Image: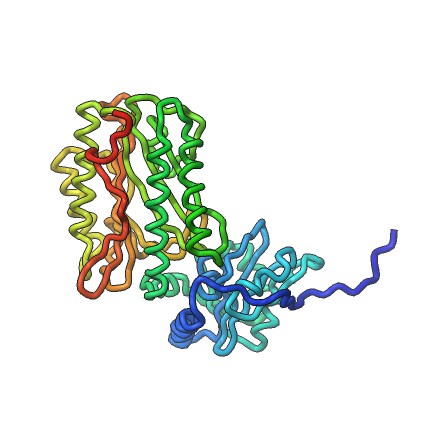
Length: 407
């Protein structure tokens, strides 16, 4: 059989329909690009080839769905161009604050030909070194020719750590919706109900409110992890079909996603009265939570906050049950992309908190099966750091006074 003779393009543009309303104003995207271009000038690169979901979305507004295909946002002194796969049609152009260039699958490496067409004659580019595999780097070097790359992933991450007023407003909206999801979860808790049924109630409530409050947003990726008993031992354990039993420790985790911006509500609950040791552990974790909330302020360092909470747990002989760091940055991130690793409340992070940062406080103790008080205990609030103080934007109550259900 002979092959078709129709000429098929490597690249093309498709402005199908009109631009969608993005989560932020044109001014917001221009400000972000201006800061990035200043970084590029300082680093001596002529173009930035962004390849991660979080940075492409941050600078262009477009959140891609990979399915094994590469995407990019190429920023130069004058242009910002998203590079998308033909399978997405005109949607990437509609949902980006920029130009868009589509590459086809009809010839291998058309993606890199698209990138090259945007930066002809460029000798030095910036990349996200933490996002590129060795194979991708080798392909980039072979297709772009005599172009040198410089890893700027840490510097770009630092730019995202300081939130604008528009970002903070969206994060506050997400925290409010997380509270709604939490209330729906709590209302659905019954002996004999499955974890998955409780989780769906919370997710549905959040998606209804997102669609009402943010009608132009992309409705995807909101979820709830609701765990009971042994399944509470990990913060990211998947939901199961296990049925709730009286006496179970419960973990409520509600995560609304608004245009790529993740927020969270996490709470410990009990179905029925907890035993004395469980109550002691729960109150101890609440004490760590309240201590942490008091320590978050402008000028405090992440490591110092961590050290103080560690001392608190050590005095109670509970430090050995601590599960992970005590909090992290919030913004454009998700459970499968993003993370501003330079702003986490851990011993090895010395970042100093400043106005415009948004962080969580979320201590967790995990006691293994067979230990009195066994289970995972976690409380989680989101705090916005301002010039003169801190605002806690989480409203759902925590602790034994509020979250013992069905007693």
